Amino acid sequence: MSDIPQDLKFAESHEWVREEGGGLVTVGISDHAQEALGDLVYVEVPDVGAAVTVGDACAVVESVKAASDVYSPVDGEVVAVNEALADAPELINSEPYGEGWIMQVRLADANALDDLLDAEGYANAIADE
Amino acid sequence: MTEPLIFEHSRPGRTAAAQFPAGDIDAAVPAELARTSGLGLPEVSELQAVRHFTRLSQRNFSIDTHFYPLGSCTMKYNPRACNRLAMLPEFLSRHPLAPVSASQGFLACMFDLQEILKEVTGMKGVSLTPMAGAQGEFAGVAMIRAYHEARGDTERTEILVPDAAHGTNPATATMCGYVAREIPTDANGDVDVEALKAALGPKTAGIMLTNPSTLGVFERKISEISKLVHQAGGLLYYDGANLNAILGKVRPGDMGFDVIHMNLHKTFSTPHGGGGPGSGAVGVSERLLPFMPIPVVGKAADDSYRWLDEDDLPQSIGRLSGFMGNAGVLLRAYVYARMLGRDGMHRVAEFAALNANYLMARLREAGFDPAFPDRRASHEFIITLKRQNKSVGVTATDVAKRLLDHGFHAPTVYFPLLVPECLLIEPTETESKEALDGFIDAMIAIAEEAEADIEQLRGAPYTMPVRRLDDVRAARQLDVRYQPEAAA
Image (cartoon, rainbow over the protein chains, first blue to last red):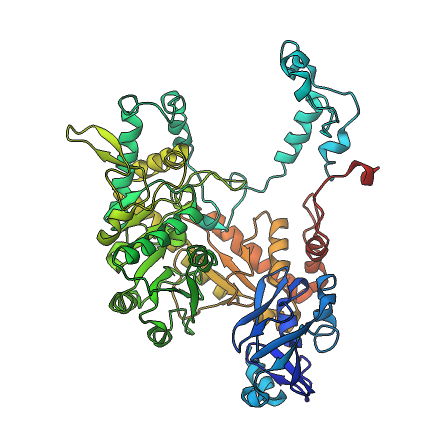
């Protein structure tokens, strides 16, 4: 059973969102997603300043099995990216909700998180996978 | 035992003297052009070089020595006759710039090949010029673009690509300046027609489909899809990756496709190990005839053969290379097609499908889960180890590696991406029942081992020159350059 923290919001495409206050959110991929991908060998993060749109590819995670797009769960502007992933993509495997974060986004609309799943909703969404 | 690198056999000053060119080499190169630093090439004797490369060649796991369930997706068996006839000195010594009058034999073969491919695919025209599959795809979508532009229809910016399509399809659409838009697949492996309807519109330039799809099943709604896309003003592109399954039985032209590329180096059985050379011949419907890449082989008024070029096809998307494709590959494909004939091509599709369905049925009996249990396989099928992965922790990689110990090449693993822990198995038409049964026995033995001793399975392979590689470390610390200082 994979780890699903209660305080996060999730997209069905397996990204998580943590509210940092002041319209800022941190985004990464779920424990379930990193488990399915297997050992990551490369992560491509967006540029700081880039505009991201819900559902559009914003990053790439590559494992020995496959390269997969990461879809932005929110609309907004990228204000920071996790530079450490360039040398240590395995951070996503070891700490998907901590050191393995991917980007921080300034939300275009603070209410936009209402469309995302809560922990229970996400647990149900991945239950039959 | 591992074979050292050729560099590790090297000793300074050692040479293969008998292989040296006669004469004074130093005098042949003007002093100002001569190299001053060392070449950094290995220095070995002739016999050392022969033994090194012979030993490596004996470690090949190939279709000439083992059952190879990667199938036509990679390379099926290449009958020796194709090679023999394509290597006739009259073909080998024909210069590509030889006058047409001196190339009538070669041109006659190519004209015939175009006609055979038209017949077997139901298309109205064929150009043999694309050098490989990727170029064939590029030519196909470039023709779709040329067609819309010739009609002044310039608002079409999207190519639709089902998620069960080949990964090269969205790449090709992007290369040709389109936005690739993904269409989902339903639970039975068919295109989700409602999602397709929602995506179709004035922006649709076309759709790229692989049929049978990469899920190993035939797209049953193809007639409806074809009608919907044409109604929206788009064209249909057929990726020929899985043509082996339907060769001459069902024709892309009859399904309503406007353009198709064929991997002659796969379906028409020409050797291309090591990445080439290939042939990505394209076939087109009536409406795309004017846009075919040149040159195409045509007939003159006196029934002699000639090249068709810009004067004949002024709307052509142009030339893709200096000449017309890879002549040697095209000749091999021609011999293959002529040896099979019409009935033989049908048998290829029938036996390819029969062998795949036999394997799938027997493996299912043995307790393996087909990814699409309600569907008949095409020429290939998918086994998912999702259930066994949850229960005993076995992975597709474990099974693939253990198959090597049993004397079988591994099938494709972890593709298509839509299916977890999957093995994509394609036996092709040329395998005997005994070979297929041997593979089934090995799979059963591996499944039993997974239950009994998963650690043993995780250590496989045991009998190969190289054991399980650390593919994660290899990808994270990619280092493929030999550095003598590091080795010392």
